[in-house]
Length: 396
Image 1 (tube, rainbow, N blue to C red):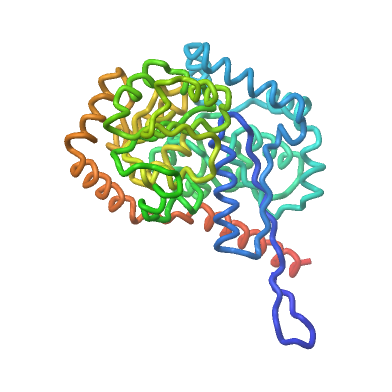
Image 2 (image 1 turned 45 degrees about the horizontal axis):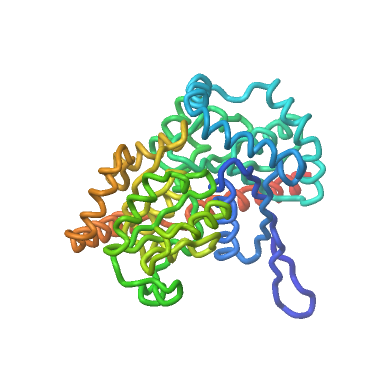
């Protein structure tokens, strides 16, 4: 790991490589990979990282079609998706499915891995985790770390070839134990979010940057999954535009963004329509309420900021479980009716000091959480792998 520089009495740290693999079925999985990449580079500059959405990288024409079809199915047939999720909840992907995935989508995976020569592979989505597990079964030896990016764990995440699981909570650890995963393979690290979400910013500076007013503020996110098309929710929020500030963050949903820009109800000094931004951490900092889909990443980002959350129509499976977990902790609530939103707006208008006090209590509660735990766990795996290699070389 350390190489001497002859004649200079100095040392040079050899670069180690971490390959982070995800898929584009929802933005959270890839966000987790990039969050880990940023954290690793921050605490260990000698580590090289590479993030790939594996299916999209290997099949740039086919993968977007499949992802689009998946989104449409989840949005239009939630009961079917829920039934499929529950019926296979405790089952790992069988060998036939794994073989089919490899043959159809991932035939070049081993070639890519040999080219990149990673010291550790980290997967933030179950499909690449399953594919790498299959390659390991065929004799390719590389440590595999799987990061479960929700507050639940479906059986599809589980493969015996995984060397380390990084999970969000004790409950997720228990579910892995019930599926036969050894305790030594599981670490509770929390879901990794970008280091920026753990930094505190001056709200006046953020307001100046985004031309925001100093008012109780609601941040609305979820454009990628069509949430912004909920006319009832949008209209209700717009009806309070003279009393509160609303930030609609559309992400990559440019179609809906342009549509709402032309609607006179949303042309108002207290309504801000934003497209894709890499500064969601600042928007969460300055906002007082987040209305969103309960994806694992978004929930964790909101928790890092202590912001209260309202969850809009959780998607079947993981989002439902995320919503239930956060509700049980008092950090979020599912929207069952427009009255739930109105109730929160009234809190912002008539009990604002209490809203701020509660937020500070949440921040104090999570202060013991170490934001770099996931990255440190991967560095530990790198160190273990390096030691194993050195020991084997000595034996030889």
